[in-house]
Length: 184
Ligand SMILES: CC(C)(COP(=O)(O)OP(=O)(O)OC[C@H]1O[C@@H](n2cnc3c(N)ncnc32)[C@H](O)[C@@H]1OP(=O)(O)O)[C@@H](O)C(=O)NCCC(=O)NCCS
Image (cartoon, rainbow, N blue to C red; front, top):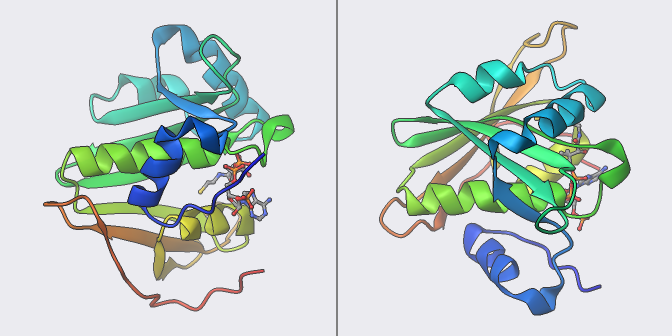
C-alpha cells in the first residue's frame, strides 16, 4: 500500500482527499455513540485525561479514527480551541492498531480545522522521551520551542512544540527549533 510522508497541512489534504493513496485510517468528528470506545482507548493507553470532562468543555474539539464508517474506533484526538490557537491536549491510538496511520489521519483533521478556522498557532506538549509522538508532530512541521522542566508527575520534562499558520491561507509558516532534541 502506498504511504506518503505528510509534511504540511496542504500535503496532508492531498493524501486525505485522494483515495488512490490508500489511506488506511480515517478521522471522523466524535459522536455521542463513540464515548465508550474513546474511554476504552484512553484506558488502554493510560491517557491520563478524563474523557467526560473533556467532552463537557464547549471549547473541546474531538475526533476519532477508524478504518471506515461503522468500523471500531481505534484512536482519538482532543484539542482546545482558544482564540486563534488550537491546543492539542491528547492523541492516542489503541496499541494493536499503531503504525497504520490513525494518528496521521487525526492530525490531518486537526490541521484542516485549523486552516478552515483561520487559526494562527497549534500548540502541544510532549514528553521528551516520546519519540513516536515527536516524529509524528515533526512530519506535520511542528518545531520544538521550549522545555517545561519536570512538567510531568514523574519529573520528566515536557517539550513545547508549535506549528505556525498563515491565517489568511492556512499554510504552514516555516519555523526553526529553539530546543535541541535527541531524535532517532
Ligand atoms: C504517538 C501515537 C499517537 C502514534 O499513533 P499511530 O496511530 O501509531 O501513528 P501513525 O501510524 O499515524 O504514524 C504516523 C507517523 O508518526 C511517526 N510514528 C508513529 N509511531 C512511531 C514510532 N513508534 N516510532 C517512530 N515513529 C513513529 C511515524 O513518522 C509515522 O509515519 P510512518 O508509519 O509512515 O513511519 C501512538 O504511538 C500512541 O498512542 N502513543 C501513546 C500516547 C501518546 O504518547 N500520545 C502523544 C501524547 S503527546
